[in-house]
Amino acid sequence: MSTAALPALAKLAEGGNHDSLNPFVTGGSALFILLLLAFITTRFNRDR
Image 1 (cartoon, rainbow, N blue to C red):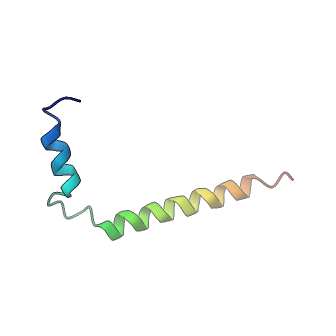
Image 2 (cartoon, rainbow, N blue to C red):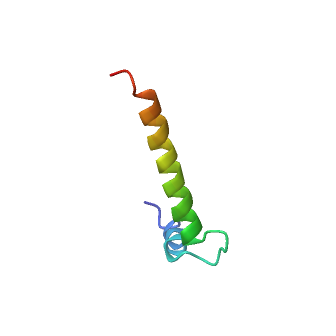
């Protein structure tokens, strides 16, 4: 790994000061996407 990337990764790990990356919005959207994918998978898996 490049040593130039380490400060950027450290700032990314700290979360920074970006307001749009709300943990509740990120987690909620990830949960919604996973539930949507599970729903689509079960709809297409009715051949048995």
